[in-house]
Length: 62
Length: 266
Image (cartoon, rainbow over all chains, first blue to last red; front, top):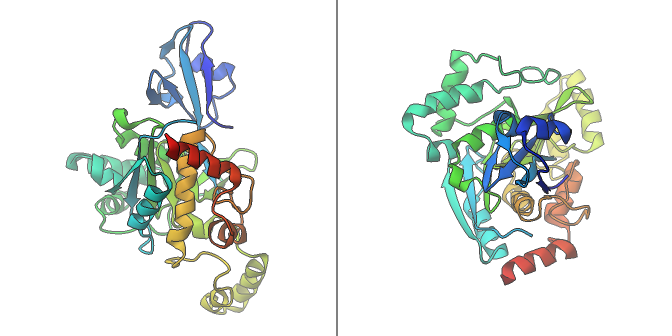
């Protein structure tokens, strides 16, 4: 999995978004308007249709 | 491909054999147009003195006590563990024999990085001698790791010794040595060079490749390469690691070399 840009189709919360994308247990960061944050610390945050988010997976090696 | 603004290197009590300035010099050669800055201990660099105790407590609470049990936020650290954490932050001691939840450790580092620098255009790399692991949901246990790419990327100088598997023969003989009560140092000496050991003189060279994995993570979103001779190969065996980082005839495969050329042309 590598970074992925997505466009939000309708208004929702971060929690709804990660649930729909089956990412609720995945180690990821999100980027919105240049701000990077952990989704689980921003579950109630609202995102709007047209917002562009970047899903940044955390990747372990070795 | 993303543009890179700057690379920041931090030292969270990494092994003495690690020469971070040499890694910075290497990165400057590879990333001609990207600034590289060495910043010292990340907590000491960002935290005000009155926050040191808070973070020492947070770090102590992410210690893994049992590799078959997933870390829980309800874990309460002991007084001695917090004091030990403080000493580490202040550079008065180095971590040893403690396993940390890697994702939680990374989250603590993330917290102290100012918002304006939380971007994939900035490559934050923390060299640490803390051993960290990630939880495997299928196997229901933790796995020790060498690196964890994110913001920041963390690279463990202990993980590079402990995480990739040593030669099979080493483990077989170690069982025999332990049963017979023989000196394990003697066993290690008989495998000298076959794996990266503590304070290994090859450590800095090896870590240059892991630093580049963090760079490529920010640059293209993927730190790894399938080519066993490329420094970006995700080695799970010591033999693979030594080949990719030291013995291979080339540093980077054609594909990753061309990314670097493109980056340096901007």
